[in-house]
Image (cartoon, rainbow, N blue to C red):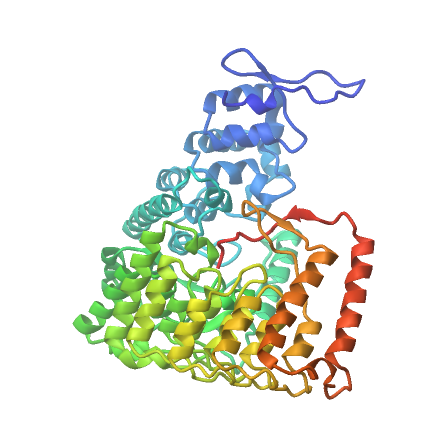
Amino acid sequence: MEYAGFQNYPDPSPWSEETYIKDNDGNKLYETEWCELKIRILERNDIAMLKRYMTVYGIGTLAPADSQTSDPFWVAAANGSTDTLRFLLEKYVSDPVHQKEWPLEVRGFSLLSVTCSHPHVETVKCLLDSRMPVWKVNERDLHGRTALLNAAESLFSEVPSKSLRDPEVDGYQWIEERVNAAEELILFLLEKGSSVQEADFGPQPPDEKNQGQSRKELERAIVSWTSFVLSCGVTDEQPQQPIGTVLGGVVSRGGYSLVKRLLDDGANILARQRYIGHIGRLSKSSNSITGVTAFHLTSLFWNANGLKALIDYCGESGVSNAKELLRSCDDGGRWPIHWATAGPGSSECELLENNISDRLEATLRLLLSNSPESVNVQDKEGYTPLYHLLASHASCVRRKHFDIALKHLLENGAKTGILTVQNYNALHIVSLYRPEHKLIDNSLLDILAKHGADINQPDKDGNTPLHLMASNLRQSEAAKFLLGQGASISSTNTKGDTAYHQLMQSSFLPGQTIDHRRYITPTFEEKIKAQDEMLSVLQEAAHRDDMMDQPNAAGRTPRQLRSETRSKWQIMGARHPLRRGGRWNHQDKAS
């Protein structure tokens, strides 16, 4: 049934009346505390049921909710529920009292922006045809964004997490539908007079002399502007770059013809912007990335068609040299190829393997054929395209798209022994970025070693790859492989620690995933067993008995550290004796 979850009568107060509406079968439907029945009706665009609902609940149906995303107007606009949105607007216009108490202008969002961000062309047409309130295609919302900008950047959207978890949902189909809807809407807005040169410079500074603003609107504008300036670091010395451009949004997933249309209509291929979103291992950064070009963004989303449109336009127009733009750096010194190997985040890697493999390979082919020297270029941290691949796709090893990208880079001359600013080589990168619950693949280590990565290379702290392997109790097989390839068991870091010291201070974190959703916290006995297994690997390679009693710079021996660590484990186990399982927040396959 469409509304089966709303047939249970909530616990009534002794003084309250039974309030309900009836579905098409005559069943009673009850509203919840969070108005979930109303939200379901609006999501389904069920105009008949909405009219029944309003007969019972009255004009309060239009009232704002505690959160924007539960506001009835927001829900209808975001879901493209044109009929129910039109009905809500008609009721809103016909009730002056409601307009005064709950005006649309102070709800914190623009209906046109919400509809374009999702995007729904028929609902946009409904809003633009509305006589009251009046929406104009080129006006900016509270955040300084136009309809076209919102439609263009709707292409950045990730597949909803609930869709990724549903085996019956094709995530790539969701993206295809989003792209088709966005392209249709963008073309419609261009016909209505929107400019391809529109850019988002964030909220405008509030004008306290503006008598048209209510005090609440002014306060909201001040907070929004202050937050924007602080987060983007705008100063006289650091000129403001737009947060987004129409071209920057479209090149993420838009097709060749649409990208070409924007360029032919005057979109600036040389424009630089800020980007706030996922980009591989840099996703944890709280700061936006500046100096970003359309070439960076189309590479990030593995949109080979968009990239080809940019390259072709350079050749046809003579505006710029494509090879020069493929060498353009963001504020971290990253070229477009760095963005391509980093990728847009784990949700993209959850899509159909053949699709993402083909897209990534086609993008790398275009980048390297037009700029072959980029294969080993280093960013400001010293990371090469290969290192971004290893760091950002650490959980994707042995999956088709990772294998294809790795093979393509190595065949084009990628080196694994190049040192980063921290003196990491490819083996360090693999050790550092591998998820705690994932075993490092020995075949990958073998490939990296054979292509030039020094097994005994110390980083700036003196840690060799073996030091890093020994610090993760799950990686005994990887440590054994390195030792078999000549890793030094006696190497010390800047603290005087050998791999033995690292082992005895290592952790054994939760991470044994079950059905991608739950984890098992290791017991005290399991930690002891894992520690002993790693120790056995080291002892077998050492051929000497004194390593456990060798002091580090602080005078601590591995034997002492083992005793201290096991005491801590025992205390933790006593405090949480039943802490054996729970929700696992990361997908097992996520990169």
